[in-house]
Amino acid sequence: MKRIYMDYAATSPTHEKVVEAMSPYYSEIYGNPSSVHSFGQEARDAVEGAREKIAKLIGAKPEEVFFTSGGTESDNWAIMGTAYANQSKGKHIITSAVEHHAVAEPVEFLKKNGWEVTVLHVDKFGLVDPEDVKKSITEKTILVSVMHANNEIGTIEPIAEISKICREKGVTFHCDAVQTTGAIDVKADELAVDLLSLSGHKFYGPKGVGALYIRKGTRIERFLRGGGQERGRRGSTENVPAIVGMGVAAELAGKEINERHEHLTPLRDKLIKGVLEKVDESILNGHPTKRLPNNANFCVKYCEGEAMLLNLDLKGVAASSGSACTSGSLEASHVLLAIGLPHDIAHGSLRFTIGRMTTEEDVDYVIDILPGIVKKIRDISPLYKKK
Ligand SMILES: *Cc1c(COP(=O)(O)O)cnc(C)c1O
Image (cartoon, rainbow, N blue to C red):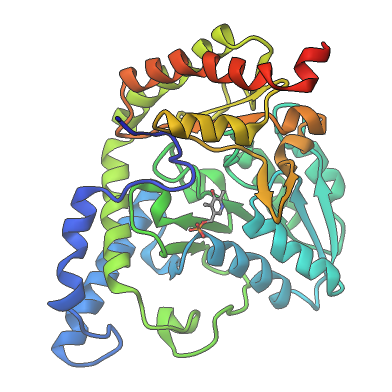
């Protein structure tokens, strides 16, 4: 059976050119970049080369890019580091109701430890209203964190408008750009962000490596204490092969961004149109146009998300659902609840995220098999029969 991967928002296959570039950095060029000898210096050059590539992709200076272990660490560092560095100024943080757990959890931790938190509501598309940001900022606000695009529903937030307000008020602005890097244009200056989180494996780089962009002059405390790596701001020996890989992935993303758009957008639109037409009582989640070029997220009424995933998997299709089965209890996605969906509808969510391997044939196949899967599940659903 042919297997079709439509879960690129969870992770992407490492690009073959990335793997090729990484390979010598395991057992040939294996020095520690902090060592003074030639082995170390070769590794150092590789790390700095990758830093330049990532800086170029986001329109930053290389010295504003700091490597981390992934998007989660970048988000945690941005939140915790800003909170700790600005304690004397204030302890109020503003974030949105649709953030990734890597932002929401550290914010929650701070809330339990004496920080005041404002969680902004979103509209039915998942959009934050910049006016709400403006109204929520107080004398004590030290950080606003709003993601660039949502990982579940694909909605792209009005970051430049939000950051403008923050800048006027002198408040640090952090943006989680993990889903947008390599997918749409992400430029630190145009977005006017102070802190920006990136992750390698979401744009065809390796897993376990990420970066935090820190605009020069931004007050931020260290997160990982240890050696003097990353110019004293993040201890731990650099993951050289992964950093090299992320650099190449960034270079490819910069070169191919238009191509990727032209490939993905019509496929995404075909998938959305096809599902909405063929599956009755299905709705599109997220914004119709302000959305990631690779994201199609639906709710199918009277149909459990997990059941759809399992049935799709049996037919070779890998997708995702907002409802995660944690410890036996089905918890609806906080994002779908935040856009105002009732629990029962939120449980019927289905996310397809496409990527560079996706073909029109794949999309046609999904549109073809999904109605049958939905019918099969609904036929045994007491909710559907009662209707
Ligand atoms: C995947 C993801 C993260 C976490 O990145 P990791 O590199 O997997 O730790 C953070 N934010 C968003 C929006 C994501 O999609």
